[in-house]
Length: 146
Image (cartoon, rainbow, N blue to C red; front, side, top):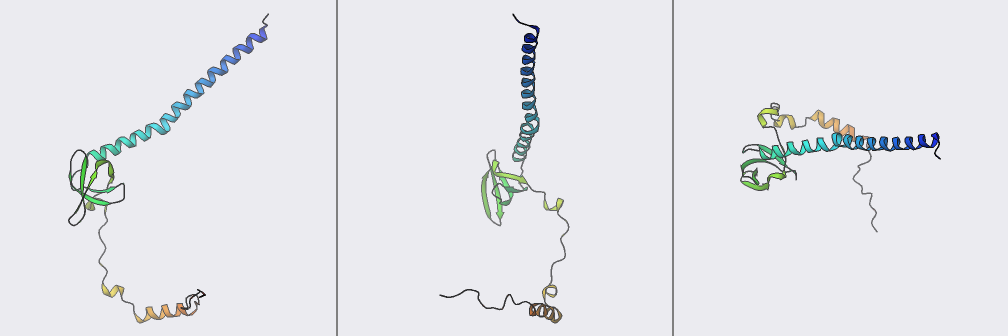
């Protein structure tokens, strides 16, 4: 005969199985919203960026090459890496589109003149006095010849 204790024990075991199942489903949903969904969103944005690149845009390829788009079709993009150097890449090789030079770049600083790069006698004296206390670089080789 089954006693009341045995019946309650069997019902309790069934409840823990249901709780375990709910926890597994919850974990799968959490993984979807934390990992899979954002990754798909990034892939979609990357695909849109690659499909909408236009001639004149500065881009960087997945190999680290910077260039300007001069022509494109459905599968390939032609980049000008430097003057008269044209390279053809698959659209998927474009890692990112760079901001144009007019948009994101601060104004260029004044060019450096020869006067700015020339050392004065005072500068040379400072360098000589700093070298006097330093015996590391005496010009002697630490190598032993055998």
